[in-house]
Image (cartoon, rainbow, N blue to C red):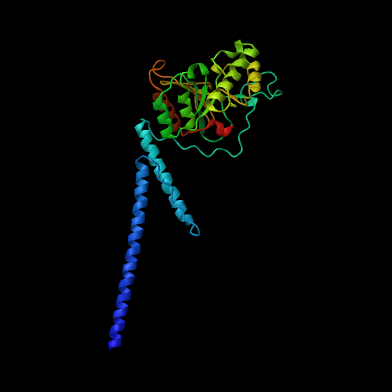
Length: 317
């Protein structure tokens, strides 16, 4: 009888220990879930959620766990963008652009505007639209006179890519502003030294304008660009020959232009098209009835409303 009682006590102690172990596991799991949820909510509140922990050597994360972590990251980033869009007064968050094509579109003079001998001399193509079926447009901003810090914050928080075409006579008073822009991942390109009407100049004068700006860009921003926009969108054969001599490979102009209070179009249908290049300028209240932020609000609301994402031009060249 004593042996039976002892066995019963042993089984009871074992059962109690098992219950305590299971309770401990449950508490640990609950604590882990709570921490993950807190991290996700923190990301939604403003800052991106931290990257999910790795499984460690010999303990890789289960594929389903990786998928769940990625979905949580995407949800947190979407919530962050929605909050940023609300802060900047947008109708909705900008759409995320698709991955750039693995094979870049081939842009030739036939996609834009030709001059005599352009193909034979392999001159930089001039174009208004990038040949793509992806529903994206490209934002390009010219000159550099207005240096609005709110604009930099807005575009950084919304993660909207754009390309700047700079003229030295309006940026030389504050190169640092454009270095901050470059540090945010923006590509800075050539728009000549003094923004002249290039077809009215000799070949040598045009070369001095373009090559001179290449020198400024390399000195101030560490790199001479390969993309150039002729001022006013005006050029001739000498413009493209000078640009080629200065190391330029592409000379995009634009298909639409956005102002703080209206849009202008080249095409008769007055619509956005996949791959269109949109122009605006670094301007403020001295030139417009509004700010760069107002201008970007008009641009982003329209393209998002029509189902377009803003992509980085250089990713398609």
